[in-house]
Image (cartoon, rainbow, N blue to C red; front, side):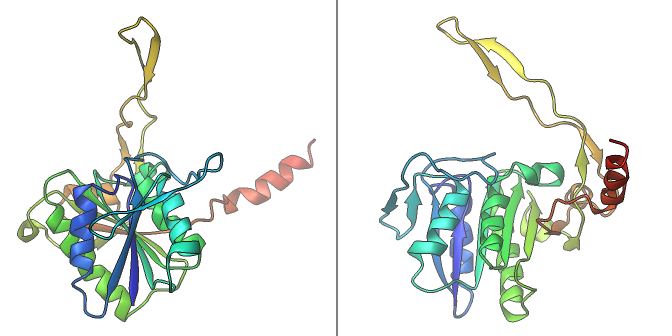
Length: 248
């Protein structure tokens, strides 16, 4: 069976290679790595539509693409894979993808594209930049379980791992997404040539990091495992909107 592996930190990112290394050790599994040629953090679900995509086969067999994480998975599943993979795994991202942040995450977006194209998918992020092996070991354990006991197709699992040695992680918790306050203000500055520039500020402070959220699980030293759905419809608001229309 085959697993398609991608990320948003780029084809040379350390999290990608260690993830692929651990996944390839699962019995009967072969991996195909298709990842962006450069960092595309924050790319969300964007597709490249105004220029052609190009692939480059690297010396280690990985395929780099001059596009976004979504481009990589889309191209791989539609053209590059000789047979349909069993699963799409995206990561390991440098830094957590929890709460509202998943809407911006290229790591989660790569997994989402796998889901859009009919496959179960997993996004894996490390809440830091040191203990990639801990995240890879947990990712491999979860993926091996998914392959032997599959969840329904169109399922996306968002995994975040504390930046701790493997032995210090307390286990896995199934969680919901937490929430942040409004993002910080945009930073205004001037470049060396005197031109006005702007930097997007840091994420907002935590609003909901209560028991049961991904933020809380990571804070307590647990791996967070959150099922994500794609339907953004505010179902409870439909009757309210219908009533509002009658007043127009």
